[in-house]
Image (cartoon, rainbow, N blue to C red):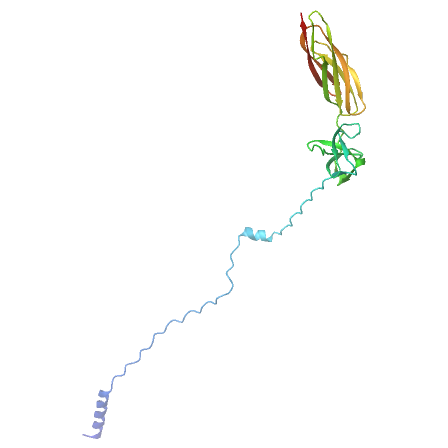
Length: 254
């Protein structure tokens, strides 16, 4: 065998002893991950309704300041108790008094600021008048309303009959009773009055002058002609219509 054949045979033997080399598998390519979105520290804004946006654009007006309550006007005595009268003159009846240490609410005045119309210190459910000469007033007197003087009139009538019961002989008629009346007025006035009785008697009207408030007495007579129960009235015609009366009776012995 020549040399060329030996070399060829040696190459064949070597190739038979070699382990076949497996190709290294190639790892499949993975898709590249998408880049992460950057995280923001700011929160997502919440959309506001249009009404809210409009309201936010409207300027807020300042609240109105509270209105101050007018100060009460008060009257106090200067140094001694003060009479509170029915009207703005000393001729009117005394219906209350303002004593030292107390005050009265002033609710009105006369035209020339010489009398104050106040809540009656003796009876707050009524009003009366204080003379400005004897009280000290605090408050806005210019804002007080002007109050007209009250009407003057008769405020009370009382009547009595003497005797209230008469016992006479049944043939002793007519009989006369004496009647007495008291008329009270609340101020200066002229009172027109008359007597009226249940037997039809009526006296002529008479006038009575009151220079100031007070009570005056009047008298009269009523004549009856039989046994009966009677009444008699003292009827005031002017300045106001008012009456007061009493009853009396006559009995007889046969």
